[in-house]
Every structure is written in structure tokens, then in C-alpha cells.
Length: 121
Image 1: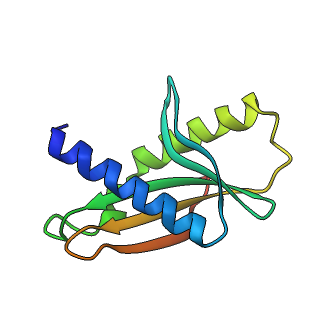
Image 2 (image 1 turned 180 degrees about the vertical axis):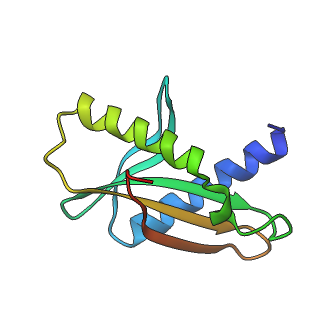
Image 3 (image 1 turned 45 degrees about the vertical axis):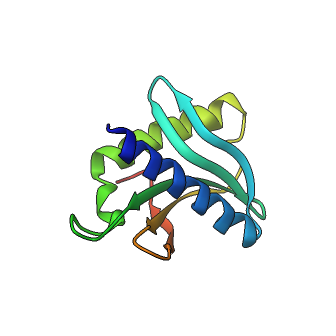
């Protein structure tokens, strides 16, 4: 990944984090990594644990950011989320997957898809 894309990704994650915090989400983890992969943000909304994937694009030239969350990516996120739940003994907690899209072309546009997918995908 190029330095420019890494910088764009970090900027998008920071914008997404601030966006979620302003809406009452509590940030628990940023860039949670295991051998299986990474989850950008793990947050709590009320009593629900939310695993958040952030996708940032500088334009729509190559499609909407949401389109980058492929079946393979969903499977990887699910595996990492299950590891997190297991490590922290949180299987009794309600949980979901959200995807945050950041379009950073000019004034950033941020959208959230709640319950973007389930573990059966």
C-alpha cells in the first residue's frame, strides 16, 4: 500500500472515530489486531458491542467505499470479532458489524451502515 493510501486511510479512521464519538459511541479499541486480521474500531453503543470497518476513498472513481467490503473481508472481520469476544469473555453481549464510509473529496462525507452484515455471510 502506498504512503498516500495509508495516510488517507488513517485520516478516514480518525474522521469516523470522531463522527461516532459525537453520536454517543464509546471507543473501546482502535486498530485491534490479531493473526487473523484487523478491525478498525471496536465501540460500544449502549449495551451493544459494535465492530466497525472504515472504508475511505478520495473519490467515487473506483466505486463507493462500501463496495470494498467484500465477502472475503466480511469473513476476516467475523473471525477477528469472534477472537475478540472469546478473549474478553463477551459472548453474552449483543454485537453487530457496522461499516463507515468516508468520502474525502473536498468536505468529507461520512455514512454509517448499521448491521452491515451478519456472521452467516
